[in-house]
Length: 613
Image (cartoon, rainbow, N blue to C red; front, top):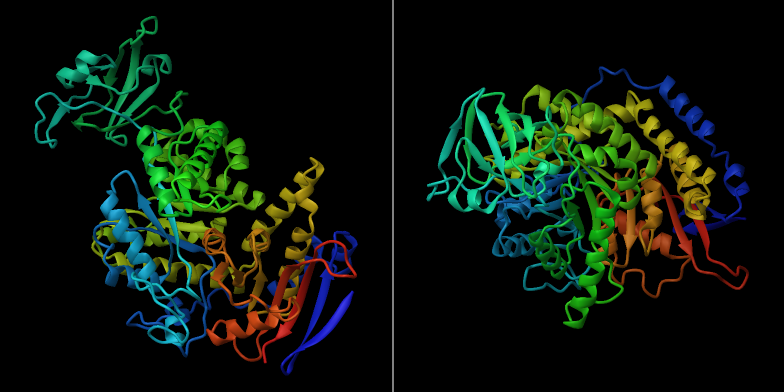
C-alpha cells in the first residue's frame, strides 16, 4: 500500500512491506536489478585518476575542532583504537575521538583496574559533534560528574580484549629483575619441560619450563615450537608421550635471546586449553560492571569456546543482579572471536556461526601459519563475515611505523586501503595509539586513508563493494535453502529495499528507527555507500551497533517518546538536520518497524523516501 504525507514543505513517499516476498519483487529489488543499477552508474563513473585529498572531506578542522559549517561526512568503516599510557588522558583522548575513533579497546593483558577506570571515565567525558550545536552543555541538558551529557549523547563503544589462555615459558633461573635473558644457539638441544622441579628451579638455555602439562600430548616429531612471537624457532625431535608430564626434546633452528615468561606458539597443534583463563573470568565479570559492549575472546579454538564465554557472562549477569550491579534483561556484551591459530581456522565456520563478530588477529596468526598466507586468510575470513552479515575487524601492525614516526610507510597505507577493499567493517590500532609517540596523528591518518579508499570505491570502482553485497545475498540464499527463517524475514526485505531505493534516489543517508538493532545490522549487510543513522532509545543497543560498517547510532533517550509513529520519521530527519547530518534538498530514506494497528494484526515494516525541507 502506498501512502503519501508531507514533511513540512517536502513531500515523501511511504512504502509498507509485509512478509510477502511479492512486496520486494514489486520494487524490482532482485540482485540482478541491483547490479544493473550499479552498472549504469559504473559506465559514467569518474576517472580513476581523479584522486582528491581525503582531508577535504573531514568533518573536523585543521585544529581538530568540529566544523559546524562542514557537512557531516563520516567514514563507513570504523576505527578501533587501543587506549594506553600515551592516549588515556582526556585532552589526548578527546582529539582521538574527534579524529575518528569509534570503539575504544582495553587490552586486559596489560591494563590495571585503575587504568581502566580512568580510560572509561575519560571516554564518557569526550564531547562529540553535538557539542558544536548544543554549546558547552546544551539547552535542557544535564551534565554528570564525568562531564557526560545525559541526553543526545554521541556514541562510542568499549571493547574488552582478554589475555586468553596463553602458553608461556617459565621464569629464568636467577632472573631477579625480570629483565634477564639467556642465549640459545642455533643447532643446540633444548628440552621443553612441564614438571614442577624445572618451574621452581628456573629455566635455562637447555631446559625451558612450559606452563602446559599436556604439551607432550599435542606435539610429534617434525612439528615446530615458536618462542617469543617466533624470535626463536624450535623443531621437535623427540617426545616422551608415554609419561604423564613427558619432556619434548627440540633443536633450535636459529640463535636468539629468550626472556622470562615468553610467549609460546604451537603451529598446527590441537590443544585442550580452556576458552577462558581464571584471569579472563575475573576481567570479564569486572568489565560487565563497567557495562562494556564487546568482549574480544583471545585464542578461541572452536565454537564450544564461544558458547562457554556466553554462558559464563549470563551466569555473571545473574550474580551481579543479586548484588544490585546488573539489571536482568540488560544486553550482555557481544562476543568477538579472535582468530589467531590453526585450530581456529580449522573450525572457522562453526566459530563464525556462534560469534557476534570476528577479529582477524594477524599477530599470532602470522606466527601460527606461514606468514605468506596471512593476507590470504584475511581475505577469506572477511569474505565469510560479509556473507554472514557479521562485523569483522582487521587488526595488528596496520600503521606500526607511526608508533615512532609521524608518517606511515607506503606499504602500511596500502595495507589499510586493501582491508577496506576486502570488505572490513573495522580496522584496529594497537601499540600505535596505546604507547606510540603520535596517537592522535595515527588515528587521523587512518581515518583519511579510509576516506580515500571509500571515495574511490564509490566513484571509480563500485564493483569492489558490490562484490561484498553479492556475498551477503548469496549467503542469504544459502541460509534460506537450509531452512533459516530469518533469511526471508520482513526486516531483510526492508533492508534490501532501503539500500536500492537510496541508490536510485542518490540519498545522503538511510535513517533507521530501531529498538533492538536488528534492522540497521541488516541494512549494513547490504553494503550501502552512504551512512546509516540508527536512532536507538537504548544506549547499550546503540553502542553495540558501532562495529557495523556504515552504522552511526544515535542514542535518542526520550527524543521520540510520546511522538506518534507516523511523525517519528519527520522528527528523526529534523534531528539529523539540526546536527548537520543532512541539509536542505538532501534525499533521505527512512525505515522502521511499526506496531500493529486496527487494520493490521501484526507489526509491519515501513519505508519512506523524503526530501529534506
